[in-house]
Length: 331
Image (cartoon, rainbow, N blue to C red; front, side):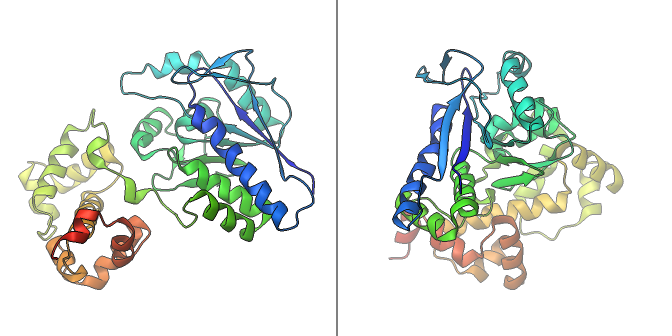
């Protein structure tokens, strides 16, 4: 089997850690594969750019090569503060967008890390495709590119040769997936153990903090959310909720859905699960008691809803995410 050619597209202001993260893990995998009897290195990696000089975020200069044919092109992310003029930023990356389009047109598999998805979308690769990105910037991506079929909670999404990942560390989820496909599950497992990388994650949902998500243009839905947050354990009553906001149920659903992309009931489940996560992490309350506290009389139903939102049953979540403070309560 010939070495898989991996190119990482470096550009001004990209995250250097996302340039080198995947190649470094692939280098580990090559050593693991060799220990298992692989006859030659499995990966040939290079950092490429249409520019002669690239300075990454934070100031380090990157050693780059000219763009060349590769089997997989990886596009790292960049700093995306709320005040950034995204139009100007992406316009300044016209040479990189041209490279992305040309590589995709030639049959190269294209992969974005975190907000590198904005470059893929701007290049036209995500139109009509399923994709993901960091939960923090998902709303911004969806608003700017409404033709992207966004899977907000996914860690890695591949659709017809184009792969997108969630934030920063999700590059390792992608790398392990690549190693698994190229070298087999045994090498992927061993590489994950050596690097102390979690190879069993399936969703970014447990890491989402809604308080950090920008809320511009969502004043009506924010009011509804605050009302639901204050009475998490109360029975969901859509007509009463609509009366409280002086609108019909149809108008409530339309306005809330238009601002959030979901129903008030879906948000209520999310809010209840968020509260339950905190209680599982920081208290010794039983799962049944927590279910009742956040509005579920049936602990079994609560467990199913919790698993759909986080990818884990409540007891498994507590074992993984419990804080030190929480583990000391009740001693």
